[in-house]
Image 1 (cartoon, rainbow, N blue to C red):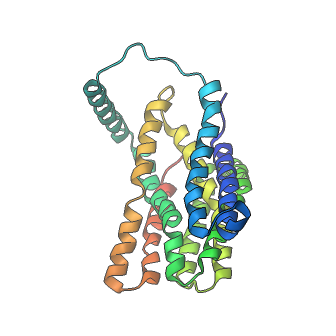
Image 2: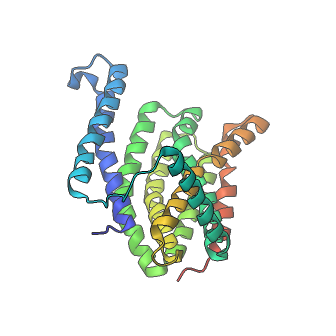
Image 3: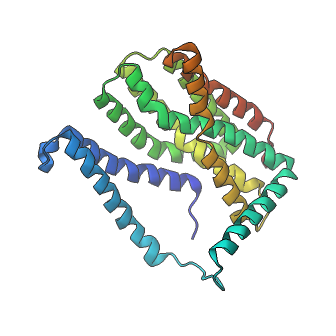
Length: 275
């Protein structure tokens, strides 16, 4: 049985949102849970995350079958084989200009997406937004992203995945410019709502696009490379923001550096023709 990416992302946002909502209530009303204060609530929130992961890991262990490897290798042999396979896949990608172009585009814009996720709270605090409003806005993003991921998939089916992702990147560019003028909690909530509308869709449709570009029968190999590119997409954005903030002395100006990633990634994606 397979699950389409948009449903996977949507359910991920829903599951994460439910637990996050419980944790927000714990921090806001610690006495309801018999806790001494917000600090205790934060510590116990980590425990709830561990329990949540364990409980929802059990169906994976019980019901998902996996083929058993024919034989076991020594760790040195496995490490060498892994690097060899990575180099082989990289060489194959290099010889496929369309796939290479998509991955470079993806690396740029997903770095911007990941930076927004990771730096939103810090940026909000720097702008003077109270922590309670920041938590509320993050919670809003989770629950808006659940139906929006499904709706974005519908949009991709009507106008094409590439066009839908470009719409999402356009929204991210507008949000980046808007963030420069951010100074009220209401604006932060509105921005969180818009972010929730496009975040899951950009992630899931990017995965769908990549799936259409990889050679038949090679999805496991190529998606491993795709995931590796995504993991590297968490460095450039914070580095750009940090460099601009250091040079200008302004956190507000630093957020505009993300336009390089969204606009650059979008322009490169525009040149990728996906069937």
